[in-house]
Image 1: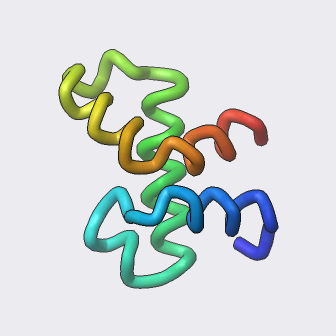
Image 2: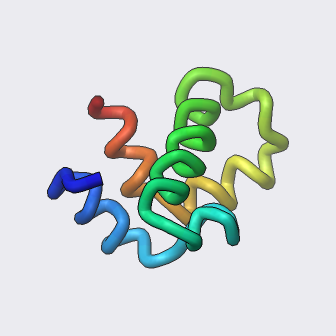
Length: 68
Protein backbone atom coordinates (compact mmCIF):
# COMPACT_ATOMS: atom_id res chain seq x y z
CA UNK A 1 0.00 0.00 0.00
CA UNK A 2 2.99 2.27 0.32
CA UNK A 3 4.31 1.38 -3.13
CA UNK A 4 4.73 4.41 -5.37
CA UNK A 5 3.47 2.28 -8.26
CA UNK A 6 0.28 1.49 -6.39
CA UNK A 7 -0.23 5.09 -5.27
CA UNK A 8 0.24 6.29 -8.86
CA UNK A 9 -2.27 3.74 -10.14
CA UNK A 10 -4.85 4.80 -7.56
CA UNK A 11 -4.31 8.45 -8.35
CA UNK A 12 -4.53 7.98 -12.11
CA UNK A 13 -7.69 5.85 -11.91
CA UNK A 14 -9.46 8.44 -9.78
CA UNK A 15 -12.31 6.09 -8.77
CA UNK A 16 -12.97 2.92 -6.82
CA UNK A 17 -14.19 -0.44 -8.05
CA UNK A 18 -16.76 -0.77 -5.23
CA UNK A 19 -18.28 1.38 -2.52
CA UNK A 20 -16.55 -0.83 0.04
CA UNK A 21 -13.18 -0.14 -1.57
CA UNK A 22 -13.65 3.52 -0.65
CA UNK A 23 -13.62 2.72 3.07
CA UNK A 24 -9.85 2.30 3.39
CA UNK A 25 -6.61 1.87 1.47
CA UNK A 26 -6.46 -1.79 2.51
CA UNK A 27 -9.97 -2.50 1.28
CA UNK A 28 -9.27 -0.70 -1.99
CA UNK A 29 -6.20 -2.89 -2.52
CA UNK A 30 -8.10 -6.07 -1.64
CA UNK A 31 -11.14 -5.29 -3.79
CA UNK A 32 -9.01 -4.16 -6.72
CA UNK A 33 -6.83 -7.26 -6.46
CA UNK A 34 -9.87 -9.53 -6.57
CA UNK A 35 -11.28 -7.92 -9.69
CA UNK A 36 -7.88 -7.62 -11.38
CA UNK A 37 -6.95 -11.25 -10.68
CA UNK A 38 -10.22 -12.45 -12.15
CA UNK A 39 -9.86 -10.24 -15.23
CA UNK A 40 -6.28 -11.36 -15.80
CA UNK A 41 -6.71 -15.09 -15.25
CA UNK A 42 -10.43 -15.82 -15.69
CA UNK A 43 -12.00 -13.01 -17.73
CA UNK A 44 -14.80 -15.31 -18.87
CA UNK A 45 -16.22 -15.22 -15.34
CA UNK A 46 -17.48 -11.68 -15.95
CA UNK A 47 -20.11 -10.79 -18.52
CA UNK A 48 -18.55 -8.72 -21.29
CA UNK A 49 -20.33 -5.53 -20.20
CA UNK A 50 -18.97 -5.91 -16.66
CA UNK A 51 -15.44 -6.57 -17.94
CA UNK A 52 -15.59 -3.38 -19.94
CA UNK A 53 -16.82 -1.35 -16.95
CA UNK A 54 -14.09 -2.73 -14.70
CA UNK A 55 -11.35 -2.18 -17.29
CA UNK A 56 -12.51 1.40 -17.79
CA UNK A 57 -12.82 2.13 -14.06
CA UNK A 58 -9.45 0.86 -12.80
CA UNK A 59 -7.10 0.32 -15.76
CA UNK A 60 -4.02 1.48 -13.87
CA UNK A 61 -4.69 -0.77 -10.88
CA UNK A 62 -5.16 -3.71 -13.25
CA UNK A 63 -1.85 -2.86 -14.94
CA UNK A 64 -0.18 -2.72 -11.51
CA UNK A 65 -1.36 -6.24 -10.69
CA UNK A 66 -0.29 -7.52 -14.11
CA UNK A 67 3.25 -6.36 -13.34
CA UNK A 68 3.63 -7.95 -9.92
